Image (cartoon, rainbow, N blue to C red; front, side):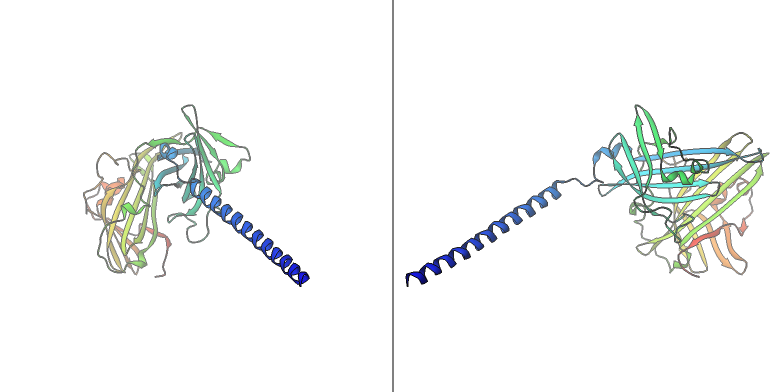
Amino acid sequence: MKFVCLERIKAMKKVMQIVLVLMVLICIYGYAKSETTISLAQEPNKYESNKLDTWMGRYGFTDTFEHNSGEINYFVDYEIIIYKDDGKYYAELEGNGWFLQTRSLAYVEGDENSIDIIFKSSLPGDSLYGIVERYEEDELMLTLSYDDSELISSWHVLRKEHPIFTESEEEIKDIYFEKLDESITLPSALPSYRKMEINSEDLDTWLGAYSYSELYKFDDENVDVNFELIIYKVDGNYYAEFKNNGYSLRAQDYSVLLQSRSLAYIKGNEESIDIYFKKTLPGDSLCGISERYKSNELLLTLTYSDSGLQSTWHALQEEKPVLGESDEKMEGNYFKEMYNRTAK
């Protein structure tokens, strides 16, 4: 009898030991989990830091290089807008020029002294949009840093967009970009510009990017104008963004004739649309000074006909020197599709 009791006591001790070990393990796991949760909750989001507020604004860099003929210079023009949305920092990069048409969305990391601009995706208006991403996601494009009061640019994969830099294997680091605007409003890619109620028919067939460029003589100078039009849809409403750069090209240098950026809304149908001015956007030489056109002024009409895409110029005619001097209605095959989201 004593032997049986002794065996039962030993068995109960083993069970209690196992239960005790399990309780200890559960406690350790619970503590570790709570510590992990606390540490994650306390860890700041790498995109969220008021220290980057000083970087918000618009930056630009323009470069020229001589054509083989020696008669004119080609140019490349870059613009970066850094902004903050919902506590996170983003950058929109735009490149225009000789065989260059790029639009990229990036996110920003860093501190008040230096930031990295890291590729996220291509944007409408990029010549590769809808075909392939221009870079790999999370690729480092550009680093901006301050050396005393000088803004230093370190080119990474963005160097592929520069006709000279792309051929060099050396580090490209010097004074290139400059800050153009300290107090910029949110850029056009954010919903703040798109909160307008516009009743329109189904215009999905017009979604995409369009362009028109021309090199011609005006007042004995070579003039290069480059129009870009992006049509998009947000919350059932249709919008257009215009961009126009005009340059006077000379043998040794160039000068800027016009820089315009406009937000517009669209009315029409599948065959024809009217594009109406809404507001001037950052990057326009008049932004913050005055509106380029009157609100609701008709800028341009696009129509599909048997002869292709027809452009009828209205107020937008003022942005092209030759057309601006004419009192006649300018109509013809000007704008062409660069990219369309839907098949017609």
